[in-house]
Image (cartoon, rainbow, N blue to C red):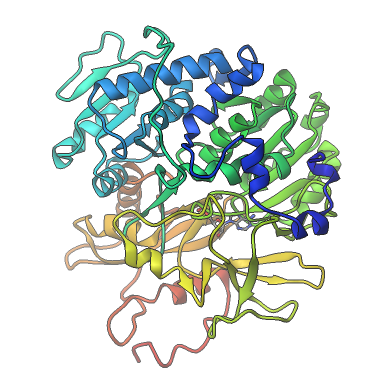
Length: 568
Ligand code: PRX
């Protein structure tokens, strides 16, 4: 196959089959396939033992690096440790850590045992953690000293959680069910018999938010690597000598599909910077590491735009060859700005936790229409459906629901313990993404917004139900609704509307107290940036709160006709 930038979209789409990736990965249908092995041992067998797989830095300037042979040995070591604890294939093992090497390598180690890796964002508070660990019946959790207190708070409510593994315990005292494991100091295991997982064996469980109910566990399988490998190669244009940087945290799907599986199945060297946003240190990192391929997100790009072009000129960013973005609409200004500032445009990529891989995108060789997400990846059959009939809209420029024909390798196989929720995502044989778009005469997709009440803040989905449940736990709160409010940097932030119980009066102190409570219990992302105390909330005749009314007010959009559903 030629390089991604030389691919002819029409030609490659017409002749596409996923067996292209199967062949390149030497996978034969029916044989065992294991992501942990594919991303480490297989790369070594190709003669890359000494090639750097991971170069890691944190904000304090600490530095560690690992070759592909280190990945192989250390993931073996972790796998052996997990097996010795008595964890069985298909049991869920959570990774609850900052972006430290143990997180990336632990992910491979867990998969090598046949257990399911369940990454969770380390900024989650105890309530967010509890909901997800309980639902998954998680058997073990890898964490750091700094986060273990959150698990201690909830462990009595988690009878299935047998082991709490602390990767940097040092001399600190451990409590019930806790055990220390130091990856870099452990005796390296040369030979580990990788559990023979197959295409449909469960691999990763990512929790994602919907409008209704608590977050849903999106169930991925080992065969997902087929799409993650090929999309990394064709969309991110990964090549053998690339230095790849993905900004995303593996607590979210971008950080696993394209922050672990995609680059390492391609044998690419990746760099990780475990630090929050800072333009100076980001540019310095790109310059120092000679990053060639950068996968980022619109919120980060907007923050970089705010810092201006002068700071760009003070760094040598000439190593950058290909830029891509995901998670939110990539505004045309950002594409144009990056072309001016870096000499390269950001390429938009659209996908979801449920799709497991990029499904609509601008391939490197395609002309970019700034503001459009691009076209379906070859092998993905996409369309937009009429909002009421769920039939494909065969007209250009009309908004409809983004829908995909099921059956690509990395599509999730279900939601954990929630068959009804999964079935509800399909209509007339199409998988519904829950987003709206239109298609133009050239087949380019233009994103128009979500089709539900989920809030997308800085590229992270936050479910209103989870926030409302946490709000209701506050003694002063009678009823609540969480909706999106526009934000110049994060696109959306959370705003909560609250009615108070008798005896409580609105005040700035109360607002602050409620906000802080949500930040601690859920996460900084879920924390409402504003709480409006109201006398009542808009409701349907049957008493359901209509968030849409509140959301439209925030966005200054017309609400439409609600006469049939609303209270008078
Ligand atoms: O609403 C879309 C938005 O993010 C949602 C998926 O979020 P999540 O499952 O957390 O996965 C995020 C990373 C893959 C989508 O349903 N989204 C994602 N990419 C884009 C986007 N919205 C507009 N443009 C995009 N490129």
